[in-house]
Image (tube, rainbow, N blue to C red):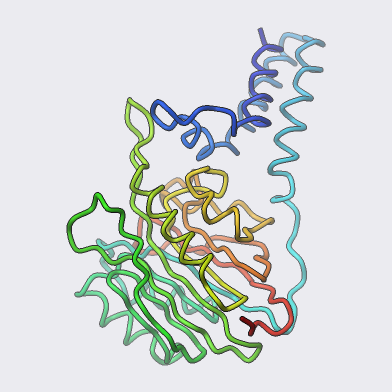
Length: 307
């Protein structure tokens, strides 16, 4: 029995893409929590040792190898920083945040070049602007998402990622050109629709539609180097984000589980790049939000500018 569970766990890890997404988007649901199958391996190992089952111990080599192949690299230390690296921070600040000033100061303390925020509400927006202004003189806000920068911004505009099924006013995407000392970078900030886990499975159709629209916008971007920061309401293993992960680089170091802040079980706040490398991703201390901020160092490929 233990050996059979070990083989099943190995199969889910190695062939998670073959798990059907209907009914209930079970494939995406599995992929949202895929790293946690490592705990199943640990539990099976304990039972195998307790029962002194040689067959189970041998079978456990399969899921252990599969987990290591998928996630072992995330445990390695990050590369050393380089002179033209950028530091970026992504944070869903929560529309119920009771202390936006403290949140803004905590993000600025990380000394990033860019700060991307979601769930900006009118009462809190002036506080973020005032608190961040001394170190981040350039910023743009579109709807409920915003970008603060140490470098000049131009070409700021709304990116329409609203699924057709949403009829109310809804603006959760922006694009801006960041003029860095190493060249121009297209920065995208996005907040994809929430997903819900119910008895029937995962409800993510709006999130998936929004990810597809965002993926098309990034694919059409003429600048070579792109940085995407956002609450994407999905992990990088979730096939629902394939329109983005299929064309962009994701962090190869660090788990940085960001949600929920009280007991993080998944990283749904993402930093992705095109023609640049995402270094080790990490979480920052908790703020007044139900998300943890995430930060990463971006290694640019020479001069970023290019069409």
